[in-house]
Image (cartoon, rainbow, N blue to C red):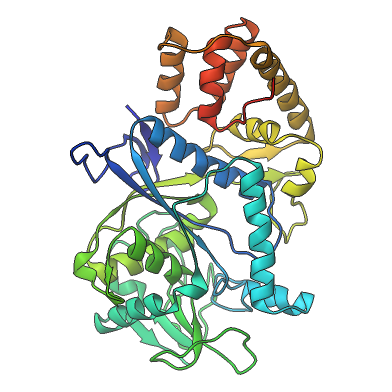
Amino acid sequence: MLSFYNTLTRKIEEFKPLRQAQGKLPSEVRIYTCGPTVYDLAHIGHARTYIFADLLRRALKYNGYQVKQVMNITDVGHLVSDADLGEDKIEAAARRMGKTPKEIARFFEKDFWQMMEELNIEKPEIICRATDHIIPMIQIIGMLERKGYTYETLDGIYFDISKFAGYPKLGGFKLEEQKAGARVPVRGEKKNPHDFALWKKATPSHLQQWDSPWGRGFPGWHIECSAMSLKYLGEAFKDGEFHPERSQTIDIHSGGVDHIQIHHNNEIAQSEAATGKPFVKYWIHTQPVFCKGKKMSKSKGNLVMISNLLNRYSPNVIRWLILSNHFTKKWEYKENDLKKAQKDVDIVEKVLRSQDQVWESETREILQFIQIMDDNLNTPKALKLLLKLAKEKSSKELEYLYPILGFIAPNR
């Protein structure tokens, strides 16, 4: 049976979909995947996150489920500081490059989708931009305000975490161990350092701003994911209005582990406070990529851009490299590992190019592969099995299994 490590329960659990099969239709699995903030080029950290999301889709579909996946595109509201301080990342890039925020967002979004296409990552069923969903965000914030979860300051509307029992549900830190200002400074009228902005009041110089009940402004980063997931997966909106009583729990939320402590804990708090219902059943997170001993990030100057790698290696080599490291493990990127991945792919694809047999029935090796993948998507072990089959010239299984991991079949 298919099983995953669930960050919410901190253990590997058998996957059980919330929606059962209806007649001839298979069970539907609803997934929300945190998408990119489109202010810079796609790098190998992005590739790891979204290749895993792709692998998750493929595993679910292979197990007979129908998948409905939603991914957001953050083109407003993601500030450069966890303290709700500083400039919006899109606006900062726009000012630096002398472009409009929309021009910046569309340019880097195009680069992101090019990466997705070249790496053979399936597109989600629904792709949605934050700037197209301002009204649903305002409606949820209004509901939170009516329920008493918010307070207003000079610079915005904040969620009061003291009103939400169990925060932070995904862990990452303990509130009692966090003195005021230990992680982020308590500024002005902010009651607690972990309270977070739902709506920020804009200054006249702010490039992206909208009307709201709290004045001209723009949404906080976290609220967009609640609005779009509840709209397209949670069915909490009808006829353009937010109806929390209609809300349904989402099966899976995927994303990077670096979002657990702040972004995902805040998503849970605001969503469950607004609806009164569990937000997500399974939280599945991918560990970050390290380079030169440090977590890969723009600020550290150690990003490895996907466009540069694709100039030197095939998409299959990059995918092989990423899948050779389990998604729950931190991974140190090294150029030599790419060269090893190239050799492994060459071994497998040499057999595939010479193959003239067609898979007809489940073999012992195929059943073994399925068991490996069902066990928390153990891709390193699955790749070892593929190599074993290639070295034994067991080509008929290879042709069947290679695409299940998202590899592009080689030309013969």
